[in-house]
Length: 326
Image (cartoon, rainbow, N blue to C red; front, side, top):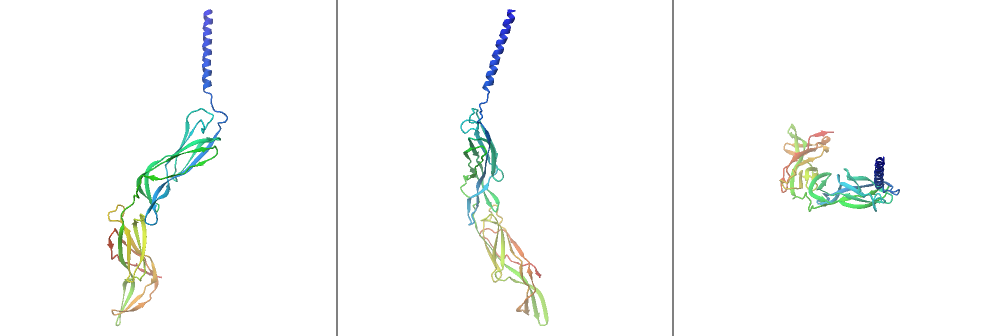
């Protein structure tokens, strides 16, 4: 009997000790948050862009134009406790980290937790290595590699309020425009003609045929150059003919062998509304012109390729197309 009582006493003591241990463990896990740790949301948003090279309109370049930058990583770090923390009355360790990447328009928006007293948010926009490109007429030409340095900014965020942080990346380690190249001048000359009716009277015999003569002075001639070195795109020039129907173009171009430059040109005249007259001859002697039917001489063109520096392409002659009477 005494042995049984001793055994029961030992069990009771052990049970009591185990209960104390359980109580102590539960007490250590009690939350340190208080009723003042009330949270809400804030949104951090902005736009990210970088500088590119563009023509300055005077034959040169500038590197101050900007385009939106996609795919840039943006992070926001907010401590959980302490001054400026999400739960200022807590002793819990660690931080909340939020992230996003910029979209095709360079925009980002990140929703984070905040509170009424204000949280200290460390916003980081990551830098990257890329190319400083040249843009002409919405066409992008890849440039030299460049480093774009990021930034870190601390903002105080209050629940229910938003904050905007834009950032302008500026390229470094680029010392010159990657599209610099030598330029010179090429010359294209030629004549433009059109067709009239030729009437030759020899005694009682009349012969009718066609004949081509130079266009009148100041007829407009156009030239489309497939890659002008000033704008890195197609450029259209125009000039006028002299009294003998000749035209001349002086083109800024690059030396032969410059990569990416074919330097081909299309030269043309537009539709011309006028009359198709008749030239009257007595034998071989020109008499006068007889005004013909009104109508339109159809536009015409010719192609001249490989217009490189120091070259002169002469005798690039062509004539108006057929005449369509009204």
